[in-house]
Image 1: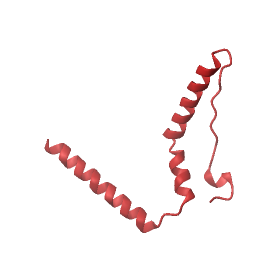
Image 2: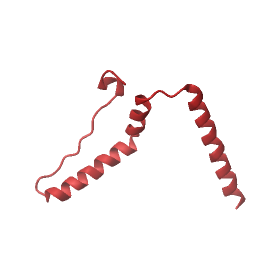
Image 3: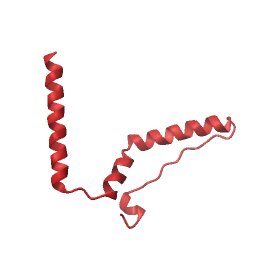
Image 4: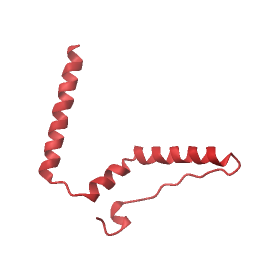
Length: 80
C-alpha cells in the first residue's frame, strides 16, 4: 500500500455541475462523465496494480498467454 497519494501520481478529476439545469439530470451527466474519464485513463488498473504485488514471472506468463490468444484470434479471423 502506498504511503501517500503522491506515489499514485493522482492528479484528481472534477466535473462542474451547472445548478441552472435540473440537479438530478446534471448530477447523472456529471457522474457518467467522471466515470468515463477514469475508465479512459486506466486509473483503476493502476490502483489495482499498486494494491497487490504480482511476481514478475506471473506478469510475463500473463503477457505471453494474452499474446498467444491474440495470435490465435487473428489467424482464425484471417482464415474466414
